[in-house]
Image 1 (spheres, one colour):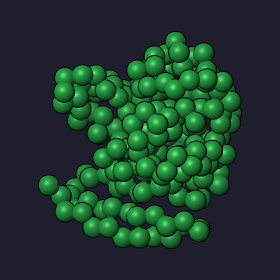
Image 2 (image 1 turned 120 degrees about the horizontal axis):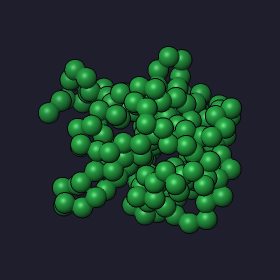
Image 3 (image 1 turned 90 degrees about the vertical axis):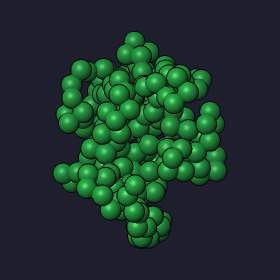
Length: 184
């Protein structure tokens, strides 16, 4: 297992913990969302504000990855009235109703504002899933997601997120807003 070194960095008025795994090809994980990204995205800010109002930690069914994604979608104007799980978020017909198209393109072609949902068979033999939002900063792509193993909302390199899905033999779907004219 890789050794992990933690360092605190200041971003605006918020503090973030950065974990650098000392192993080749390990994803960089940033606890929270950098303020520069939040200030560019009212929808992401809304989702993050709701996450913090619920206690700033991962709670399955109350403050998990799908709840975070739904809050983001609501900020984009999707009139979702109930909590969806990754099972519903994974369905192209359901996502289409709320303004997101499924394209069978590879993860490398994802762009800011895309929603990433994957499903896989967990250790208990049941189907489980995870989801997040693609963001970009400069030339770098990241996925913001609420993660149980990391204790809450994190910003992770997109490559690391997609590698994680692949390592789980997950079925991955990327949904793009129909009117991709808006920014994240």
